[in-house]
Length: 533
Image (tube, rainbow, N blue to C red; front, side):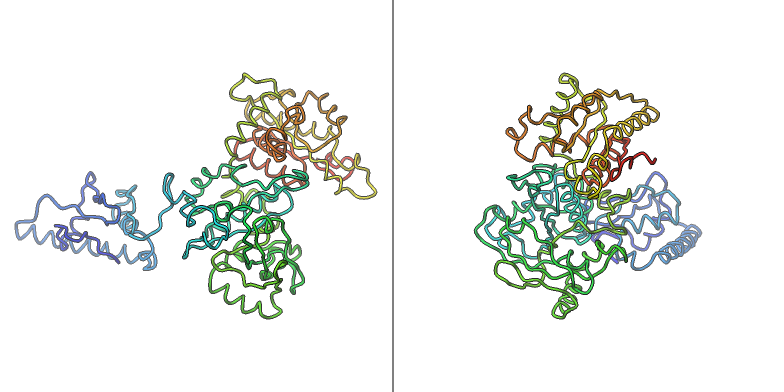
């Protein structure tokens, strides 16, 4: 344990415990201005000068010395080794004087990592790489630093969940996260869309600050490797998808991102550690985090040479590389949880609470959406926006979820089901908050292309975005109708979504946590499916 007295101090070591015990209430132990120094005891103004007073002082000295020893004895040696000296002394002070030292701040131990603060150079993504993006990602990784990445999964909202899970995994594995772009999915964007950087959609500088306390460090692939690079990097990764099937029967998840990033990837299946013994589709965060540490990785790779763990050569050059140690990578991060499968449906989801809820919209995208909402509501000159209710009616591709013997009109939820849920939201908002939201301030977003359906929406006096007349695609690109819809959904004081849609699920989480809002979901699958409660 370090000395409790600063080297070169004029404090009398023999009288230190006496001074500490006799410290008056208005003179707590002084904290050095140098944050790497430890506590410095105050001195008494007078000393004992008579034999009786000296004897009394010695008795008091021995008494308090025993008390201090007992208090230190109650603390484990491990705690003394791990905690800052100031924190330990604060605990001792609490033992002796109750709350006399309440509020005393712990001193930093030299070399101890402190959470990054806003404005620290650690928040600059360029501090995590050598410099500007290079043609090979390996040229830009800093020796001694450890990184982690993964790929996308089946639709933009699912990608958001997967990337949030990746960020959570990066914090518990103490690695720098390299975020991939969002690929253009057919279900949300259609053909011909571009690969969109994470920072074009979300406020990445703000996220770095908000997650600094968790030790998160974040860069994007475009910061690491030049887009369109002619250099194809070979890389070994772990396959979560293959690991979800027992006995090595699974396969890795193919992904367009690896081609976009000019990567030729081989895979080794992760160990089969399902969260649920029946639904084996998910694995746990910590089972994946363990693979990013050297000893566990080495042990498992020795198994990979046997049939215990399946391996898959790369598709371009046929190489079979072990999962990279400096850049840990996983084929998909969607099917991961802490305790349950599809954990984002649970209010306790750690990936949502600690990561996803902190991912706010890019300010430019949010400003664009506010303009759309004002025009849709006829409130161009109103600032701020009045309270509103937003709806996400997922229809288009959800017709594929209907049974073959059920007509889409009997399977997909009717507008009346959404109207019933809107009424419930209106009533609860009025009861809880005294907010009355009329039908004219209900905004509907949907992938429905049938104008007759939209005509029924207008009969309810609900509003919509007309992306055709707004020329959204021509002005901003193919991504923006879906992005603007998603931002608008999150801005409601109330929200009504569609069951089994992750886009509705995430919007529901945002409205509840960001706006303290009221939400409902509409069920579908059979006629009257949403009338059972």
